[in-house]
Structures are given as C-alpha cells and as structure tokens.
Image (cartoon, rainbow over all chains, first blue to last red; front, side, top):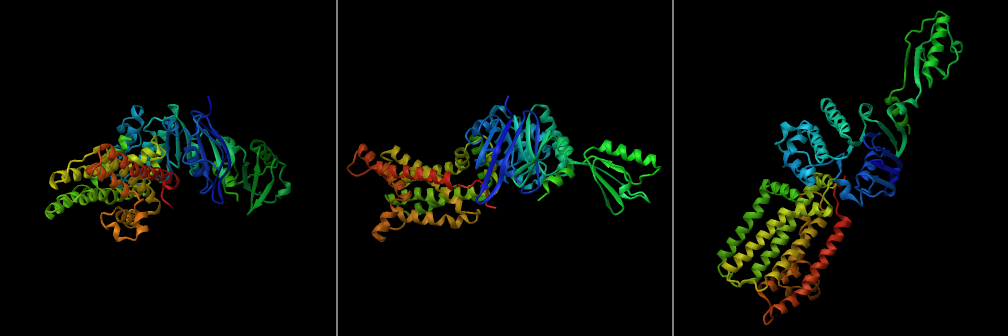
Length: 299
Length: 245
C-alpha cells in the first residue's frame, strides 16, 4: 500500500519569497508524523499544499495516492483537516456547526453528540460560538476534523492555545485515533507533543527539512554530555583520553561525545584509579529540545 | 450542500437586520405603492421593483454575507471540507437567493392583482429573466468581495454597481436624459437585459406572438449568459477565500 502522504521536492513561492524550498517526506499509513519548526519555517505553507488549498510552485504531493487539488472531492471525503486558523459563524452553536459538517459527510459521519463528547465540548453544545474561549474553538475545530471518520488527519498546531489539561485530553484522543488505524500528520511547536505522540518527525528550517526520523534517531545524531567540576590540582591535560573533547567553563568540565557509555567508563575508571571524586557529576543523552535548538535555531 | 443552506438559514433568522430587510422592507414598499393609488398600469414601477430586489437586496446582502464569512474564516474552513467551491458559494447564498425569489414572486403577484397589470403572457421568459439575473448578481456580489475588506465597507463598495445598474436600466432615470453613448453603454450592464426579459415575459411585445417574444428574448438572454460566464471567470480568478492579513 502506498504511503498516506507522499511529498516530493515541494516548493512554494509567494512573489519573491520562497517559503517551501524542496521539502520531501512520506507519512506511512497508521503513523503519526510531526512537522517541527520555529515560526516561519514553512510548516503551515507545506501543510496547505498537502491539504490541497494551493498548487505547489514545483514538486508533487500525493494524499492517499491522489492529487489533493485535482482529486479534491475524493481526497476530502477521507481526510479531516484542522487549519491553523479556521472559523465558524459566531451565531451558530457548536452543535449546529457540527451538524452542518456531519451532513456534508453523509452516513459516514459520527453522531454530533459523540464528536462533541470526544473533544470534551458536550457541556457547551448549545452556546453560541462567539461565547466560546479560544481553546474551546480549537476543540470544536478538532471535532469538525474528526466528525467524518477520516482515514487521514491533517492538523496544523492542534493544541496551540489549549490549557495543559485540554492538551493532554487531545493527546489521549489522538492516541485513540491512532489505535483505530487513523494516520495523522500534524505540525507543532511543542516539542513535548512530538515526543509524546510522534512515530517520526521532520524538522523544518527556512523551508527545508534539516532532520528527519524517529525522535530517538533525531536525538541520537546529537552528542551526549558529561559534566563535572574540575578536581582540585588537576588540569585538563591530565584527564584521560575519551571520544570527544574536554571544555572548561567556569570551573566545570564539559565533554560532548557520541559514545556516552565508553567515555563515562574511561572517566570513572580514571577517577577510581586516582582516588578522585568527581563532584557535580552529570551525564545524559541529548534531549529533543537540545537537538531542536541546535538544528532549527541555527541561522 | 443542503446542510450548508440550512445553517445559513439559521444565521439569517438570527440576524435581525436581515430579517427586517427581507420581510418588512418589501411590505413597506408595497404599502407605499398601494397608498399611491394611481400606480395602476405602471409597469415600470413593478418591473423596477424586481430590479431593486436583485441589486438592492440580493446583491447587497450577498456582498455582506460573503465578506462576513470570509472575515470569520468560515470560507477558509469550508474549503478544506468535502464541498466544492461552487457548492460553498451557492450554499452560502442559498437563503438570500430564496428570500429574493420570494420577494420577486410577491411583487409579481401584487402587481398582477393590486395594480391591474395583466397576468404574465410568457411566464418562462419572465422566470428566465429572474433566474439569470439572480445568478449574475450573486456572481457580481462574490466578485465585489475582492474589494470589500469589512462588512461595514459593503455599504460603500456596493454603491457603484448599484448606481450604474439602476441608471442603466432606465427605471430611475429616463435613458433619454443621458448622453447617447452613455445610455448605450449602460444598456449592456446586467440589470438592463434582466428587466428587458422581465418586461417581455410579463407584457409581451405589442403585435408579437409567443414566438415573437421568444425571438426578442434571445438577445438579452445571450447578454446575461455572457455576464454569467464573465462573472464565473472573475470569481475563479480573483475571489479571496481568506482575509487579507
């Protein structure tokens, strides 16, 4: 079976500004794929092309094996989309807005009450949209995205503006959908969200993919770190050779290494042999935050 | 698409201003005409009413509605759903179109009964004029949203189409009061052929049979068809689904 989303050498130009510069990735069926990046990295521009809102300047997009612009009707019947900013008439209630959307999907649609329940909006079903908080509108948007029982969900920053509790509720809902076999492509700038949910991520910077793989793979490309206080009477030269260079900042020694276990073993063996106590010893793998900052933040 | 029409109908019913415009304004106009007394036989007044409904009610209401839905990001949201672009535009226009058709039916009925006008001699031509006019003015409304940034601005941006069409159709200003070339140019605008079809369908043409009326209807119908094509091309080319940010 083909991948749910296939994006190849995608480019999108607005006047003289090229927002997407040759982006390629595949989203396999049943996985959750997260696009990470700082603001302006090209996440929304890329997603809009996958959603079929615009034709790419160059490159190809296939969604469920089809062209999302040319085969719009066929693709839309099986996808649920949540835009970064989408709206509902302020004078409708969530139940009325959802009924309209459910109607467009015909018999395939979930009952409106179920969809509202899934996003935790049942108690707000009959107030006007204009009275909803930003987070509640976001959840209504998610309800609309899932009301047609889509095979593929495309969510642009689905939890931005949600309070922490709603965010965790949303994660639980998305995990449930994954269990049901739904494929999810989302963008987020919450790294924790990617870490919690994503099977694979792609990090975008200035319109190009600068890293891709599982969170563990992306992080593994970054060196682990060992730090300790420089023991009294010891110079950097006296420390044992490890894979990675020593660095002294403010009395603390930093080692960045791709081989954490070997380096640590060497260091601890040396300390034991010399009867030295390494105060303030700390050793850890890179975190997604560190990887992200060093990849996505680099100018 | 029926589901979109239904939710738009709910919104129309919740908008006091729209309800007022849809129901009370035509009632007041009929009341005014009736109290005028000697309107009997004045076909221009009644056919002009239909023109007023198309431009003053349908066109203006739709510009406001499309702009409101665009600025509330509703159109943008709908475009990632299963409906086609045409279905979104038509569905959003549905209730306003229904109200306009209802008002026009009411004016025809009142014209025939209260003002002593004859029953339409060729109802299909009358109906064709009304339907083509409705489609063209709905498309013009969609095009007009491209230069209307807020709902409030619709009051200003709809004026040119309104004034030019009303002037061109000859029911407010006699066309012989305008310089020849101007009057001629104005006759090509959509309201003129619409009202021509309405008059032909309603009153026929002196000395012409049903076939004669059909023949005379071909030119204005063709002109409206051309406007429809032009309108749709302009919508495809320029209509904005999301607010300018």
